[in-house]
Image (cartoon, rainbow, N blue to C red):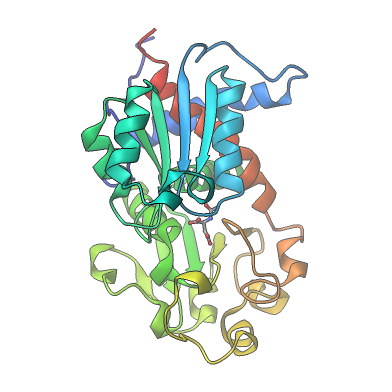
Length: 311
Ligand code: NCD
């Protein structure tokens, strides 16, 4: 069988990928899932490779998941968080990157509050770059783990109906997913308070904007809830969190509007009692922990396809 190649230097977003690229990453992730079930969770695939996790924004899942993925493939993983680095002493991004390049890493995984920071780094460095979230722009590894989780539970991607509800304006997860869903023939409905809708909805063709969560949830196979990103909101975008929970939050009654076999997703971290009740988040329809589990396999696939294919 012909070996399929991921023909990109970096993974900066869903934009620029083909359906074949998405499928290659998902299928590779499936083949890696079993490694995490072994008693010795390690294969030598990326032995001798150096992977730097450069995180300028807080992260629990994404950073840990990339580190575990690197270690399960036997790469050396180094974590740099802005809070404890020379960024605090005023070093520019370009200088940090120049210094890291001098230490010859193979892959740099970057999270940054500025849109385009990973793209800038990728253009200046020989190492491969993975975008782990840039501002409100893209979060491709989260999108891919969401796709894997949906495909596992629904057996397919095409023709599904997905409802995305919450703070879309600040969500890089929603933007990456809306791009991928359009490519894969998934029908997307979104709902947010008008103050939390992206201004550039027009660049996401085929996405239906609904005025109420009830409308978005009708017939949905997949319900994806988003966190209100208070840390990115300069203005008050909603009168109160209680009011938000009442109008937009996912509770048992609202979930009943979706299909009987609908799954519930959330990228984390969750504001329990705001965008989702604990009853639903921890209930039988929730696949939120499957998303986290699949995150490791997807990131192993990304690191392998970028760093380990040549050998
Ligand atoms: C998301 C992010 O950072 O974009 N979290 C994640 O990576 N799992 C979503 C969020 O912060 O709400």
